[in-house]
Length: 327
Image (cartoon, rainbow, N blue to C red):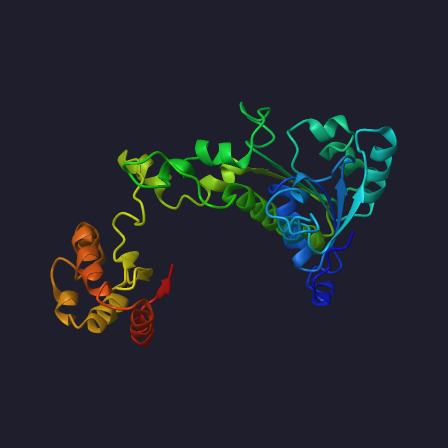
């Protein structure tokens, strides 16, 4: 089945790259989606009896086809192939022989049982880049554990940081751990393709753990704990010490996000508020001072925003070159 939404994709920068995707759910297929969007030929191998479960996820119109599948499966060629059988494995090896990238996201050891582990496929295609995505990576004490992105998000700390401080941890509204892993897998594969093609060498195995991918985007959380012994807590709509950067109420019952946490932008916000003296107030004049008085500053801004209709407020902030947008 072709999910070809734009013929422009076929002329993308990766149009001479062939990818074999033996993956399901989100992480591996998102990696394949990125390659397909950039013009690569992506051949998706799906097991019989329903194929990728993503064909059933999300909302479906009257014809029963998942619109989520039309996103994550777009621009790919799908074939049914039972790689659990000798014949299916033989065909898979034929496809991998002619591929540049091979993506899989099964539990470590699974594809080895199908004769499609890295050592096996490298023997038949030394230039192949293999992207392997799993919950905890291919090695280490947790590598053989079953895991979904939700578990990795919890164990890597993202869930702990998400939500209000007086409430239980919540999840981000999308499968962010899986998509981050797919993104890092694609970046790793592109780097390996660059090295392979630059020196005429061989391929590489890209080992991506979903937990690793989340840890990689935790900004200063780990460094702050390592250096100061401080564990960041849930902080709701703010980042502690970064102000003003919050959501603020409007007179007509809406919310607007404002990010003015830089000295020059904060001065422009103060001008727009008709309170230029705030920018010189010792409590708010510097980044550190604003962070120390974050709650007080948010209260002042909120009292101002709730006097305005949302559309008028956004127009005013736009004219002042203050980053803002509606929720």
